[in-house]
Amino acid sequence: YVFKFYNIHPATDIRNFTFQVDTGTNTSYNQTMTTTQFNAQADEADSSTGLGYNSSGDQAQGSSFQSIVERCGNDNDSCVVGSLHLFNPSSTTFVKHFMANCQAEQTAESRNFFTAGYINTTTAITRVQFKMDSGNIDSGVIKLFGVS
Picture 1 (cartoon, helix red, strand yellow):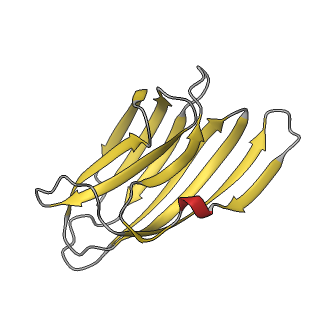
Picture 2: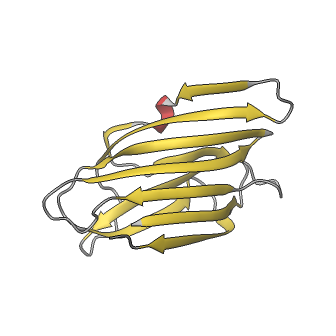
C-alpha cells in the first residue's frame, strides 16, 4: 500500500503526525514496531541547516503511535505532505516493513522526515490510523493506493 498525504494541517500548533496499525477485528492500534527516523532541515533565513538522527522518532519493540513528522505548525502556511509505503500488509508469513518520507513547515523551518521500520506481526494488517499526537487534523487529504 502507498498512502499519500496532501496538505495535512493540524488544528493545534506544534503537533506530531503519527500512524499505527491493527490486525483482524482489533481496534486497539497498539501493534509492536521497531523504527528509526532522521530529518534534514533549513530555516527561512538560511542561517541554520542540519541533517540528524531523531532519537525521539525511534521505537524499539514499542507499541505507541509512530511519528512520521514532528512539530508541525498550524499557521496558515504550514502543512504536511508526503507518503508512507506499507509493504505486503496482507502477508501472514512475514513482518510488515514500512518507510515514510514527509515534508513539513515547522516554526519557520522546512523539514524533511525519513522514517522506516517494521511492524512485528505476521498477522495481516486490516486497519491503519493516522492522527496528530494531540488535537485533531484540521484539514487535508490522505489517499490510499494499492500497488502490486
